[in-house]
Amino acid sequence: MTLSRYCFNNMFELCRYQPMAPSAEQSPRNMRDSNSSSQEALQANLREIKLKIAKIATPILVNRCKQTLKKFIKDEQKVGSVGLSKARTSEVVFILDKLRNLDCYPASQIQRVSSSS
Image 1 (cartoon, one colour):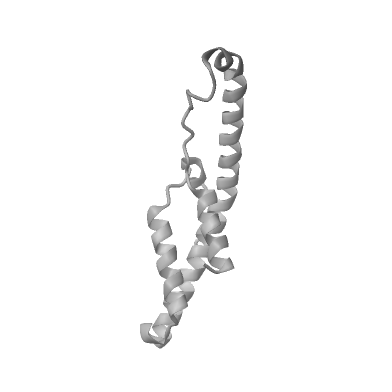
Image 2: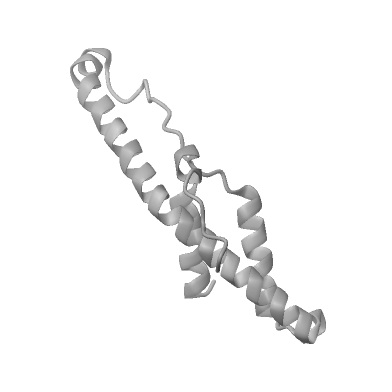
């Protein structure tokens, strides 16, 4: 995996919705009661941080995908699919596969990407 593909994959991971499941078996019952409020606060802070990151990263990711796909379509129209390198085709397949499987945070989908570019 190239560095650019690795970074691109991590952008998708930053935007991916990951609901936090409460873990009931982290500690014995008497310790759970004393730590429950701090654990809940920590979980809430973690969810908030992940959401903030997703709100920033999602429009950037969508723009990057949009640029790559538009360039690919433009180049394909010029030279046909035979003239494009395997790496370019592989990148587009990677993007489409990641987009198909991406489950974004609902709040991060509110921001719209400008269609002027």
